[in-house]
Length: 351
Image (tube, rainbow, N blue to C red; front, side):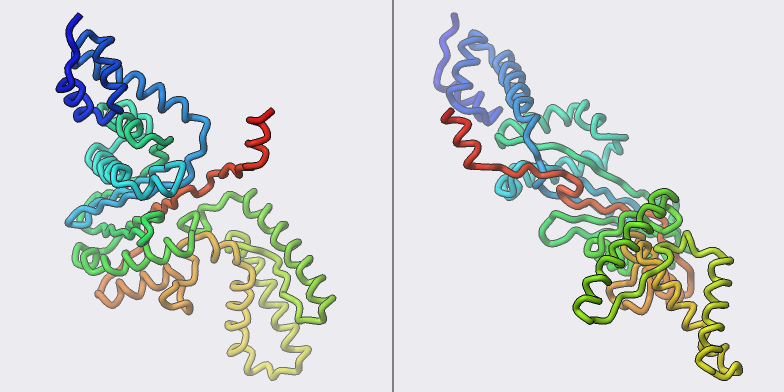
């Protein structure tokens, strides 16, 4: 059996960052064969990582990489169990390198990343950090030609990242829209849109939201009535998807009936009706304003929608632009965190 020296242990530790005693143990098992010892550490590292599989990783960081010419952008979310580990330099480097890998190789899914040579590096890094860490999701937007503008934003806490893509009429407009797109990405980071437009909503989803929101307002009004406070308006709809020509025609007819009942002169109706119709649409599209990026009130000018703000910015450049896609990643979004009952845990261990 080959003698295992302190220098060999040191060399293996430097190469793998594994604990000293583990390095010595595998070197003895491998009869001093450094490559075999390294493989043993990898195998056991993978096994250790697998033992963490039932833990919940809902903390972590996002990564963002944008091409120097703004032709491409990638966002990545990597989760950890604790926020403490997310502040670890090793974890932060893993996020940076993973973002670079996804940006450079354009994998189709997480399995594609983890099944590659880079996946081995990722797993080894997880072992070194010593906590459950997962590449959860990623996305890339890439311009097909020079009339497409792309930009993005990562929030200062590195937990939210957004990339936005706009189709423009010319390369000149696309170049001029970059700053506006960053502002739109900042808007999306704060306002949490889930889709681009109300046109993307599923009809069943809208129907369910309509019933739920109306019932919630009715219950709220019951409490307001008890407190003798002004009641909230109960809408008929929640999305522009439901506002058909027939619905608008009926709304206009109702407005005219109200104006007639108020004895408003018919000659001034044309000045009143457009504003009343706009108010009707505003009251009956709450779902759009909450979840559809283009239909949200723009945070930098709430008198405009995001779509209108983009249109106006492009017009000032002498062209046209339309947001056609965006990706927003927020760390832990949608993950159900486990609530630990410390007292119960101690009692279980003592029983």
